[in-house]
Image 1: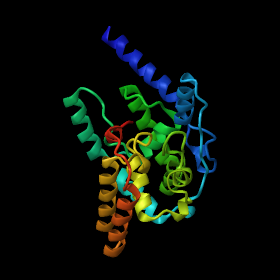
Image 2: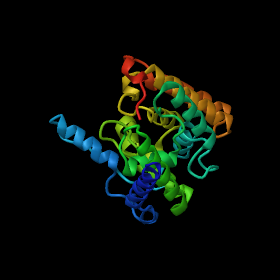
Image 3: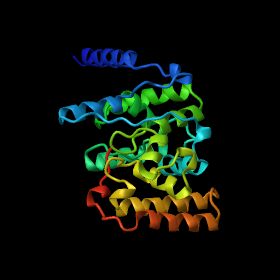
Length: 254
């Protein structure tokens, strides 16, 4: 019986593995849509609302270097060093999951988040996590790091119906991605744990704290000098001033 169960699990795993998409076409092609975009559209239709989609693809050269640094430092500081999975952070997240009895958001690298956004759902099941790890490996094997980062920045969610950093920059600050200041980049990066709940307009204290922390990290790795960091801190306060704090903005979502 145990042998039959084992063979069944192997067959199931092989079947699921074979069904997972190939990452190689993404080397030269941008995806027309993503699993997350389609999920949000279905959610909108289920609520009798018209799906909203704001998205404009841009190259890394058309994104502010400060915004790129802010996102990488906030979401995955070891992005250019690991091979898709930060094993130390993954181990810590698994330990937390065992203690809490559920999977949390922690330990997801930029490549893992890209895999999930492109092809998977937002549920937190072990099967979804296993698929995510396989797809992460495929992305890292097929694509250079800068291509992975470019894809991520163009598909990640930055508000209701807002996808990609160009749309995010225009939605929240009325500028292009190339024009984002360090403060604006830090705020966008700080939205990513809960992009539909936190926004500069929400006045979220958690967003403000996180943005200041991102600027501190950027100064710590010399992406900003002391004068630039001080100006960014002041701009964050100015951008967030006069806004009514939204307690819902302090929650995180996957």
